[in-house]
Image (cartoon, rainbow, N blue to C red; front, side, top):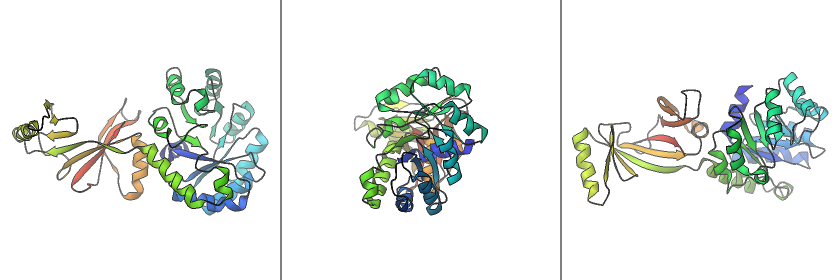
Length: 322
């Protein structure tokens, strides 16, 4: 079951779909996958929810499709029978939680306060939906929950948009984000598949928030590094000496020996390194784990820094968590 939560993290944004016409489900699935969000939480607010789940899975077999707004066990049973891989509820329903645990179905009950979180923990459920997220305090309240509940991760839903998704994505106790903004009713009813795809792409871009932190220049040795740094001082950049490199401003690092990359390296900031690695994997990039640095305990905390195995234009790339 842990693997599915890794998939939630890797995808990052789970579109929350209310679909009135199941015949549109297949095209919607294609649009979401094309936009970089191969997932859907199909809400049981419509009569055709189960049928829509079946249609989306048939259209995109590798898509992560589950059910949302599940209010009782009967709905959970119907959803799983239709092929749902997970169950999400807007609130904490112990009957639904117990049924999911008994049947080994991943579930994320909705919570909005410490009492509900505690009730879920006592059931052994630690991946939770914060709803309605923005009205309850957004990522700030999730920061607050991280203190007393370090074992929990959250899927904030309600008020998450392309404009604020990056702030959510950088929190280490946020598993993924849920939202409807890329699958609004007029878009689905109007069959605006290309528009849905573009909104998804924009959301993915905002979620990762890739940007360059600094560039590293390789020098043969410390003396050469000092000479290079001296040249940068002509431009008013003071040298800051470290054990393995010299920084000439915050944007230029001069290595005291030939480091990774034919020409040097580029430090690429992102909101979540693990999620960025999953995004880059289909393009042929893999992490060089011997270079990994962690935010806490090795292999038991989020990645802080790791190099990629492929150069870009002669430069090695290392991902750095924001």
